[in-house]
Length: 124
Image 1 (cartoon, helix red, strand yellow):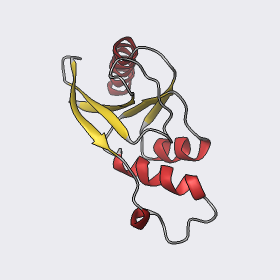
Image 2: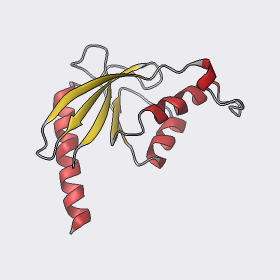
Image 3: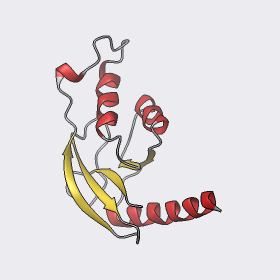
Image 4: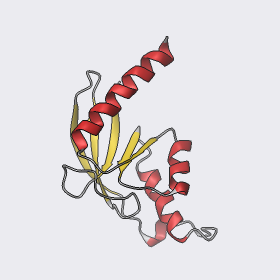
C-alpha cells in the first residue's frame, strides 16, 4: 500500500521550514517497495474565507488547523518546527510528525524503515 509524506522545504533538498511558515509542501509518494518520489508541490496557503468564523482566539492556530486539513491524505509531515496545537490536530488525524532540520532523502528512508517495522508488527 502506498502512502504520502509532506515535507516543508524551500530548496527540495533540506527540511528547512516550519509548519506555520510553509505554504508549499513537497509531497512524496512511497510505493509498496519502499521507493519514493515527488508527486506534487501542494499549495496550502490559507485564504481568509477558509478560516473558522469563530476561531476561539486561535489567530495563527486557526490557519495551522486549516493547513493540516489540506495535508490530511498524508501519513507523515516533516518540518523544522511545529506548534503544539497543530501537532495535536495532525496526530488526531493519524498523521505522524517529524520535526528536524536535515537532508530530506535520509530522513524519508528512516521513516520508511520505521513504518515497515511497525506495520509488520501490527499485522503479526
